[in-house]
Length: 364
Image (cartoon, rainbow, N blue to C red):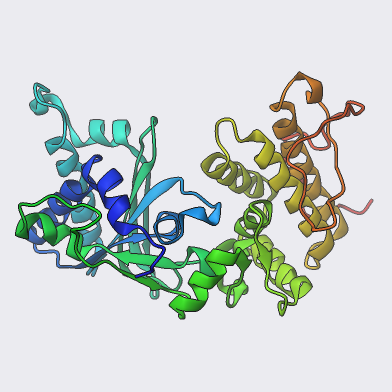
């Protein structure tokens, strides 16, 4: 809980109007009816951060909802998918002939992403329900996971069980003056410290080498949003760890391009081309300064890829900057400008994006 947090306001505006509570209740009860125990339901990630401190500047793209469940085998994963699709069928508008709609049809129409991870240390499943006119709903069913956050500011979870029970126990609608207690937690470990980081736009993490991708893209995203590493941080060491892990997880140039494009689409879609450009400029600088694990030609190929993507983002800002690539120096505070107000000489893209290159060169 937080004095400045607004869980009641968020519930009133989003929870009730969007029917999220009813949807979660249906999914939870359906899972339990099928014998799959649900230990709790939580709001996670950027949406939870936004509830606790709406003025952070991060905003949120999706509603990330975590179900704590027991996933002991393939049958459990399959059951989760079947239950979610069946619930989607129940929520279709009246008058729709449900008999003609198959699970495959529902999956193609509503499921944007379907992920299953089953290893010795990680057992979880993700079902992302697309909503082209608003926020996607990300349903994550977690048995165990080594790490669910990258930085302290996105480590929050808000326990929703009291909200789910509220509708069953009270006939009075929620309001600012009448609502159940909502508890927030931080997977970072220290809730007060993490909340202070969120309030003051501080970048802090633990063991970045343990994060898939090293947290490199989120780090650059935070820099563009005005967040800064805390003064005690060894920034060069932090960036080296993040870059090394990024290239360990995404060693192939094609895979790097796919990862970058997916991240940019998820976080800088629509009219946010100026901030997308600034993020790519920041990424180019960090990779250029802090990459020590690549051969020179591999490093050059990755930098060319980032430059090409930045060129595309720059061109989207308007005809004055079309087909131009401008690296503008950062200001005294380290902030990269998000717009370009001058003309530059058009250049050819530095990397043909349709081609991949080997990581070694033959000797003649």
